Image (cartoon, rainbow over all chains, first blue to last red):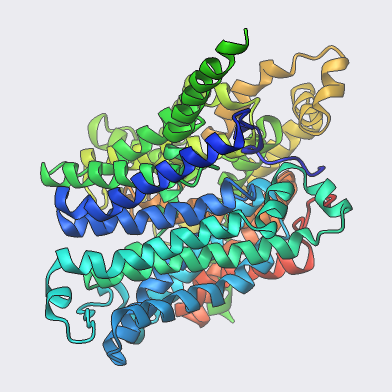
Length: 338
Length: 289
């Protein structure tokens, strides 16, 4: 079996738009994204808004691997969930302000990502997905067995939300959103920074042609481990925010169905960074809607979305929209020259 | 000593489920290049369909052992024709995601129809009680599961190595282009092979029905252990899938007996060790990286 370029390679459009216009578009999008993040709790129930933000960062962390490095991690529940637990444990037993607890959870997620990443990158393609999934399941069983620490089936209850004694943030989900969304935005910015650094360009090179990247002297495995650990850190950050927001951490956070949230970036469009948040917003709102009307077969809906997206819209919503818009822009751009 | 033999038997019986289902997974991967995430859901369907057929039409275990795998074969053919075939030319990850979606839908459909508590299925006549061998007394059903799954594995092995169909299937697994060049229509075998693999998962489900709790969730963890099995055995290898299936069953059973908290964890530790020592799996061919 020879190394092949990742499936997502052909998805990225090399747009023939003038650089100045591209950067204008980028700033406009960034502004829209920021406004959306700030305005969100005015339009949706604040705890749901927090869920959207947390899943958005989770989706970005998956996309960092899938869209830009060509690695499908099906085990990100391990990082999301273990950070949810560790964040909760720190908040309960140490009583530090919640950002510090989340930082602890995030570091723990990165710590366990080192051996998991080291072992998983020894296999590529579909094996990578299977191996990460299996390791995540292992973490699930560890949490399940370690009753005294994790509460086993009952999960970790009563996680406090202490924040320098500022009562509004500690009790009101609306103010808490603003206290926590900064962390999420920081995570998203970190992902953007990683991708637009020389390191990020090497990742894309590895995605597009691992053999060539290796021939150019890059240690492909080491790059993969590093980006895996960084991605685990972002997933951990998101999981920590989630567990503080909900006040509990359950085994559900570590289950393979949570790893299955790779649907979020796929739905939004892999390799686009913006796609993940779009997918997260749609799925969380939809699940919330279904839960309010008492529909208990969410898997039927999520699974069907998965099937339709993979069969018909492999670029995802954002990717499809971008292709269409770029097509329009190109046409208008060329018109005067004709 | 007799306790040890009992644990061994328990492991071999559980290994029988893994081996049969992993065999299906390996054959599908070999010919279609698809890792079927819905394999656990198909195993679950095999068990649920047997329980429902017993309840509704009074179809007993022995006929179910033949009829349910045939039904599952047809279901597999349907899945392949409606969904899987459209993505065969693309990267294998797409079908992985597709079958994951299918698994979610199947599990929740069963959950909505039959609830989360287990469906009843009593041990079939003739396989109840204990089998006495000298001073040993072993659960008859476990002996049967082990013997029967071994038998099926051997039959599949013979089918693959001793018949013309098997030869074509193996050839299209290993050298699809050259096989085509020799004038063999490889595509003709894609759909039946997918159905065959699903049928094997269904057969494992029927065997599990009298032995395990029949719930919609029974396939969730099962499929992940199957992935560990094929990673250990080497995904392209049919022999590897069978050997690793029994090996994982044994590890699980000894784990339950001697360190019950770690029985599931031990499987993944074994997988980690295999990846460290032989990344391509025990029977897999080395990837050129």
